[in-house]
Length: 231
Image 1 (cartoon, rainbow, N blue to C red):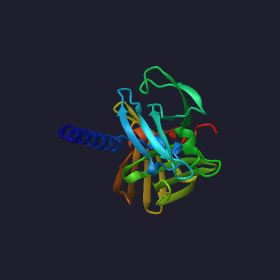
Image 2: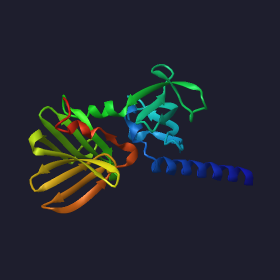
Image 3: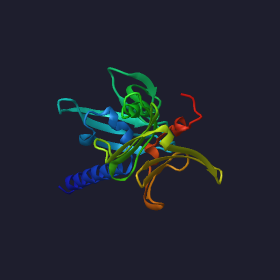
Image 4: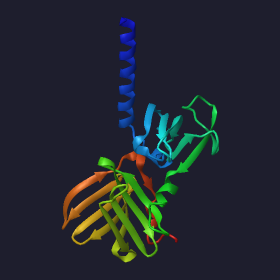
């Protein structure tokens, strides 16, 4: 009886530890591959020295039923992969069974992000900040689109003409930073790319709040907003 109780205790401890670990690691890039990311169950989640995140996921399908446990990986290059024996391309996962090759369903985070831009928009910058909020900056015909807030329901969306948006590049202490400024009345939204990633909100010269990006969630092509850039 003592052995059984101990085994149950160890099992519960392991499950609780894995759940806590999954919460501490940013799994956002895998969400676009899941029908219902909020109900997904993650286990055996680990982050390797090269930044790759691996683990197992059991998510629901379109009918609300769990489809079974599948390995997944989020390499540091911004791609997200879920093992799928029926569809997808071949890819090597060092952290999902050594050098074994898996058939996977893959999605470029950049391609997925572009779908969040208005029609004919092109992703310039995106990241997740605290409380699950997302910062989004798109290049659209004739101007720039800015949004901030929860992914499904942004708190703020702005569309500005190119002439009303300021883009600058700075190099300080050997580090480069791109900055795009979007105005909304007295409020200024300064989005930083490069080595400094986040958004600073100010009003009449007084800084109100700074939201730092989660580094592993950043998609940064802010240079396309440079007026001298082609296209």
